[in-house]
Image 1 (spheres, rainbow over the protein chains, first blue to last red):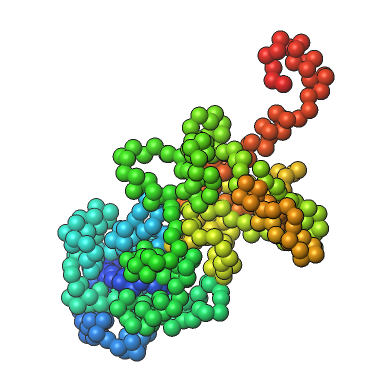
Image 2 (spheres, chains in turn yellow, brown; image 1 turned 135 degrees about the vertical axis):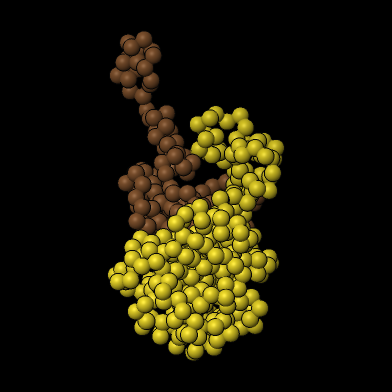
Length: 296
Length: 163
């Protein structure tokens, strides 16, 4: 999603880009990365566009600014809307990706997208994620032709970043408002509030929508501490990925999971336990995890 | 020793067909009982096709699952078993008692295929679950009645060929 997919006519002039995110903290809904870019020569006009700090703006004011920005032909913009299911899946994967990495990749993806459109980017301004200097180095290595400025509170320092911040925030607010909850079922409603863990409306929604087996609707970020805390009393689900971490053997050899760890109530007799671990069974059965069951 | 009663399978009307509704998940859910699976578990077919099999995508407790639906080979059926009722057709208690040493199971539903799911990895022919189906072929070869001609052929080839 972005401004005209057509390359802007000023694309061959030196341009700068600002990048910011919205929705990093909430326990539900998408996280959105937004960017805004324009010719370097247009920079002085930006200051007069009164972006200020998007977080202090009211929602209606933000929406108004966003619509005005879209009408400005000297500005381009683009967003990356990261689905909460993708956040959960990546952070809970066998090879985990942490939130900072996900953020960095999204920002770099936006830069690449704008470059691929033929825009001649020479400067980039970003709000920091993690250590600013490390992030700056990472970005410079990936895009050697761009001069990067990475700092905290970049959206209040650089108008191009506060523009990006508005784009991200409005996109996130709209996405949340229009979010299609996949899960059917009578007791599911859309009164989830802002999605921030401290928001009383969000807290109440979480408590109300907790399910003993399924946890929550997939709108919720399962990798969040808030979420795991809520699910502590519910049905326990054990994953192979978690088990290999806990066993802490150091060796990554695949140990055969016992039938009993999959909830099968077999006889507790010694012979059944040996049978279940695969010891002494011929390789054909061991490899296929087939066990003879004479009683159940 | 125990019994498994599959007689209800013969009457199609009494029986639920759960084909395309049986799922093997890559995790252990420490719960037994009914749950609103169809409200929360929403598999979708993905674009990826592996070895001619269309893969599917789903999420459970935030984890991404990738799965494939495998048909049971012809000649085999899947059954969902439940504890047999204590009562016979007249509503009176059965004479034969059901005890721990004599568990009685009966078929409650059947299925012709099931979907197995991997966490993060695409399904493939090398998955343990798929390979476990090799047993069907082996069992058939092992237990197939041996014909006289087969014995003769095996002996005349110096006994080195397989039976």
